[in-house]
Length: 270
Image (tube, rainbow, N blue to C red):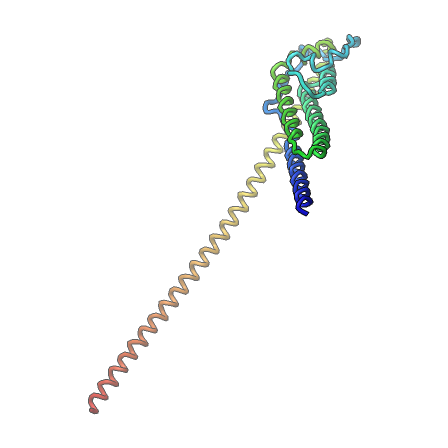
């Protein structure tokens, strides 16, 4: 019976440790870059329009691997799929660097999550065979996320020139004043809409703050009225208590005089 109880306690402790490790892994399964990537825009001169090149050189498979970056650390995780999509995004004429980098980060986080899940399953199998606890999944997740942070730091530091080179390889600037003016108008409209949305959001926030301040002021006013009413009631009660005390004092004095007159009368009779 003692052996069965010890085995049940060990199984419960192992399940609790696995649940705690899974909860810790789910709580920190992704990261957000602490420093956003610089815009690094690829723009044409005035009256020129950005257009994709008709004939672009094909890129071999090795140029799409993570090693092709030249500044990213080696990884025990398979990030090549993310690197391929990221570099392909860089080679889309007119695409923005921030869009590509954000997609890259999402892909890396997804790879970390899948790697942690796979490693967690293998650790659970080995733990069930050996009967020992293991925090390998947590270590794997921590190491993977640290590597993602290193990737994003390298990308923020050295990725602009790589993005510009990729855009130069797939884009041309064509002289076309009407089209260029149309693009500028569209860009300006987008900018004005963004500014209008920002102004609307700021105005809404200020209106909300004003409404909250007004509600607080009304609540404070009501509280002040209640306090004044309570003070007035307290003063009335104090005046009533004072009046009762005066009446009691008068009654006591009258009783004292009556007792004294009775004493004098009895003395005279004696």
